[in-house]
Length: 278
Image 1 (cartoon, helix red, strand yellow):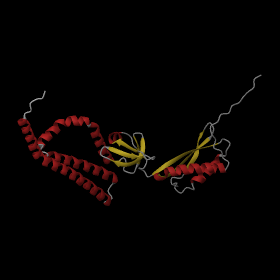
Image 2 (tube, helix red, strand yellow):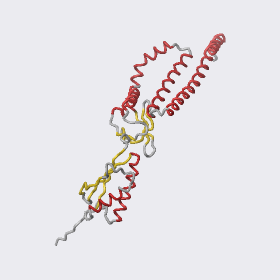
Image 3 (cartoon, helix red, strand yellow):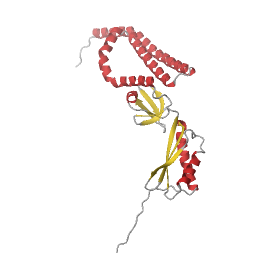
Image 4 (cartoon, helix red, strand yellow):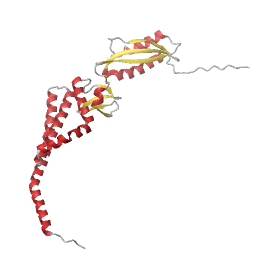
């Protein structure tokens, strides 16, 4: 059974739709154009800021934070401008934002804390871009300090993004802050080997490495009489950037030098004595 069609009503609705399209289509098209052009302008502004900071030799940590913050503020202003172009009254828009502000603030409390944490990190500067730090159980080089997060790059080339809030309120280990760092070795020899000769061999290896600082001078001493070995503690100082190179290179060189001088490096072992009982 077909329903009667009110052609007059349909014609009126089509006319109203056409009038609305004529009224809002130019506004919508202009708003879209302004939005696209605005994004391009924002990209140009942030790019110009980066180039200016580079020429002025600006602090890299503060540079990235300011560029990120400027981009976010400009995008918010662009969105507000586009909304106003569509005919939305800004007073009503502000009233809506104000009414939803409490709910939004509660929903984004963690985000706001991360923003505050980022500001605190820039004020107190516990680390900067390029430093190697340990935070929240992760170790890596600081690639970027963003508005809400800190980006680390691990030695095995993994990117770790950590929120700023827990970093700013917990302990941070900065391995690059002081410029130089102490390297500790533990080296064991057999109980039957000559302690003085072993110390001479080890010090002969370490003093040949030009990367090792002579002030403070390298230090070696017996630190433990262990179950299977006499353990030496060797301490040397170097630039932070040479830490792992010195550690791995000299660990291998010391092993070869001890072998060449017939000084043993024992491994854990257990002596079992059997007694025959008649």
